[in-house]
Length: 420
Image (cartoon, rainbow, N blue to C red; front, side):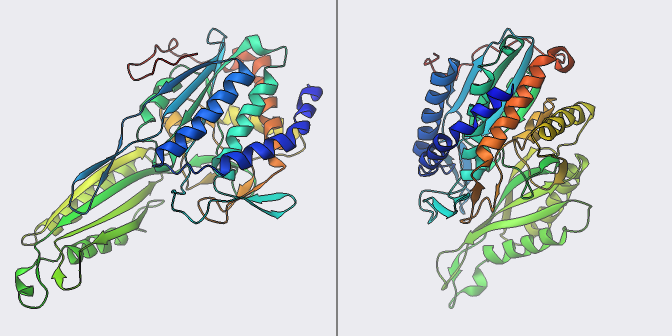
């Protein structure tokens, strides 16, 4: 076992070079070409190093709403499923996302060494580094004598950073056919694991009013921006009214020019919840505010969106898995504990589907979702060693972790014919 784990150390330079290569390819969620480029590179690497099967799945488009209320369909990148030994008694689902939050026109497109142990760059922590950790761990595990006891599926989705709207159903489908989940989001800023997570919902509000000349006929107009401002104010007042619930308006736009009463406006906002009952409370409050605004003459406010990720709580199965991860980390000399966090990820989706999972097995770094994102470069090796050890320990006692689940899924109609 020690020889296997030590062999990963020799891969530090190669892992670093691969990370820089991936980070220099823009893969903002709505940059389908870039996301698909990353997916193709990784799918090829997984197949070459792991001799696994591969399925590529085209996802439905992402629906967005303009200030006029019209739908815009944005194409998403392809989802990749790679698997090996579906007949093994214990089945593990490993997931990671191909997309980042940085669009093609972002100023943050390059990698820079901040010091000899710290690399800055788009997606180096969230989560291109994590994807390489996953690949390295599986490659190392496949050289062990325990492989026959454990089968695995890797799910690489292109839309996690926008809440996984296109891939959520496939994540749930795969969860039903596996015993445990391992997700490669970056560690918390202090290097620890995320435990309980808040739920999340994304919403869009579109307000329509009546346009008019701002000077001659201002009295004939109905200002959509002012109505939206009232809605936003009322939404913001909900903060602090229910424990753990936060509402954040993140995008606001509307109008055309200052000499016209604006007849259209839009905002997008996010809600975080602590328990499942929070969702219904939030929906009732939003409906109340919506009805209040719609009482205004010639003002129409429509609400779009929903809660896509329920809160993640830790049951006995989760705690047992966390204990295993903690024990493995102690063996490597880096003890880990879990902490609650307000962030959410596909670990929420897996938990909702009934699959126990650990969702911060990726690299150490920080300042994700900002132009100061960085990775502690040695964590590529350290975290690959951790995941390898976890897989080895699971394979040693497969019966302990097997849960009641369905048979392996058949290919869906959306899956392309390039299975290899």
